Length: 101
Image 1 (cartoon, helix red, strand yellow):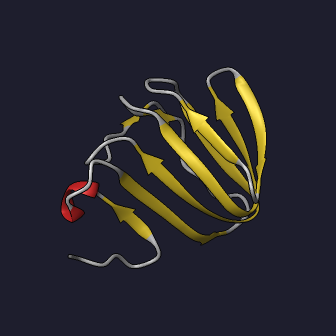
Image 2 (cartoon, one colour):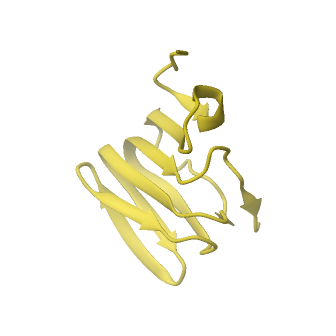
């Protein structure tokens, strides 16, 4: 069994899992990924902080304690508003991203 550090991108295939993770240990305000999508759903488990998410045509302010989901093939992005800690769960053994901007 391999152990992962509590940060960064982790392809599930490296651990014998069908789920991949992006672990955000404390991302600073103003940062966040540009618009993108995945061929599978991405679940955001927000541990603390706040971020403004755009998922499709909807804008949602995600806060610590919330769980948000970007469905498969739906463009999404977020901008950190307050130091953000989260686990992003990718329903795939590998992280696959199509950048749209």
